Length: 351
Image (cartoon, helix red, strand yellow):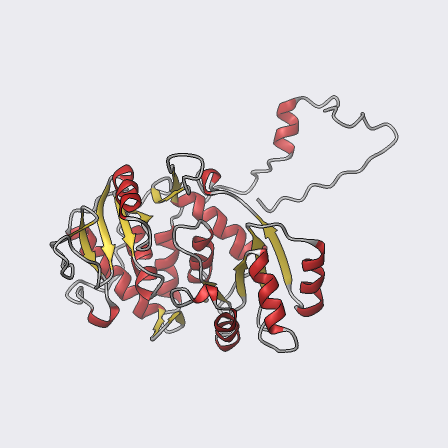
């Protein structure tokens, strides 16, 4: 992660394909510098610390919603207490069955702050897939929106079941957990504790869950926020990926541990180039993740306009980045471009 390898060929160098005289352990250690001390913190600790550092700073922007760190923290801590009151214990799994929204951000953070781990279950999935994922993950609870149907067809309440799992509804417009304390929980969550589970697509068989630890996410956040991006209070990340895609965590968490903002695109907004450009320009977004085909479309739509001028970092992955596309990007956008790819089955983050 973040490693640059420099090679220098000299006349006396061994032929290509030869490891030379260095024994394998020495070679591996040289390419895997772990001199930085391992972090002994969690995502819950990092977010809670940021709430205390910058309570009045803007933290979350979503359709119809703007929350400061204090406001976001209060809802996260209240929901976390509600989950624990309903039996959530250490590393218990909570399904998150929500469309992309401010409520989704609150739910993701609340589950981890409560000491549990979340598993995404997209509302758009077939019923059988959602139930299979929840059963395989052994979900204890499921967080839903206010319109999630019960088996009887009515609206769910805190005692109902959704996809066969006890449901906890979340609606910022009709907040049900205001009686809970809005203060931080400060639970002793172990860094090696489970933070979330992400399932593969199942394209090669039965979907498989990758189990991601807090310290693995914290290490990546240290690398991204401090070493790679130098994120700060002026940064804003665009959250537009489905929660079931591994990149979503990289869109949500980096700004929320350094005083920046997460800007939430409306459901299906990721499919509308004009909407995305307006959102990026209007909210002064500084970080986006794009597949190459969408980068191509946005560059074409933004040509001759300042719509992308706020960007400081563009992460491109999931598809081939051609030299021609890179050249177009360089001609239009004066910022850093990163290209990376990694399937859920080898999550970074699955330490």
